Image 1 (cartoon, rainbow, N blue to C red):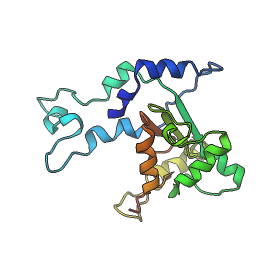
Image 2: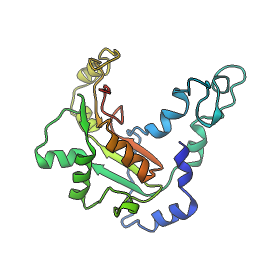
Image 3: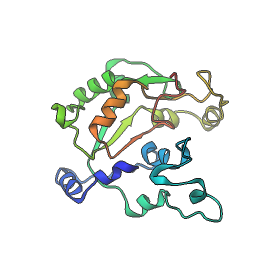
Image 4: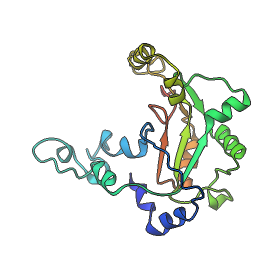
Length: 208
């Protein structure tokens, strides 16, 4: 959430200058964890505060003030330069087999080669790559494709798989790997937000 302030008018204007076809694509089925999760689901335990010094009473109860609500960005809207890494298409092309409905960690190395295949160097500009400060990152792991390929009864069965803590969790999804290289890349690239087409941006369940 805090990195949305990287979308300055200057950067948004520069992003608009890169438009070539003017085609518009709906993102209604994509999950934006940077915006949706971090702000109010997990507090700093010692201080009991959430993002922007928000406390529990600011979120629920008679003193709730919507201080840290997502409606602030939804009312304003988000516009910037999007970078799509279509890992699912890359995997099909390279013969990489995996089930989006199962744990499958996509490493930085794989994303790097995916980007190269698309003609994008996913390193930040400071390191000689194509990623600019404030870019919006989208990673397609193939969940939506898999979802629409299944009958409704199978979708419902998969959606209600038992949820337990640990690697045996029934809720299982492909996503980015929980590795230091991914963390460093996300930090050093200064993305304004990240999004994926799966229920979880990171591969789930966690193996860390």
